[in-house]
Length: 194
Image (tube, rainbow, N blue to C red; front, side, top):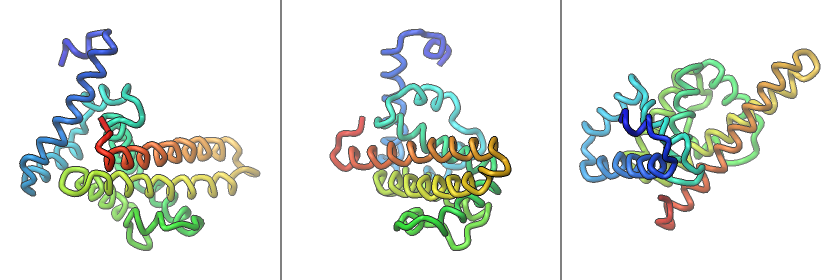
């Protein structure tokens, strides 16, 4: 790993990012035992996958490591601030006019603990379910959060413009993630996500 992170060869870094992402998914696919999935999910919850995520962060958005990077960031966002995530999700759920809240699968209402459990279930689905479905659920979650962030930004625009700007940026980032994750799901179904 030291050699890889110290290397400045973008082609080598891209190769390693793609091979580690593929190896991670194939390891669980070869042994879909619940205990294996539990260990992997628990490890990522406790320790993160920072070293691998650093490699994945440079991958194209619509690639296997790019998808895993975005899932990692969404999980990190929720675990780091579940209260804000719950506030944004609930506001988005009320405001959005689509099936995204149903696809995401959060209970109604969804508090901080429920959202942490939801993202952990979505992550578990990456390893023991249909990868494309897990990506679509994460994309739907991001769209609901983006909706909530946009509506809260509108609420703050007149009184706290800096907070409104921060929320608007968050909504844009989440909307972009949603599009990337949906695109990755479509590519996965075509056996074209690498």
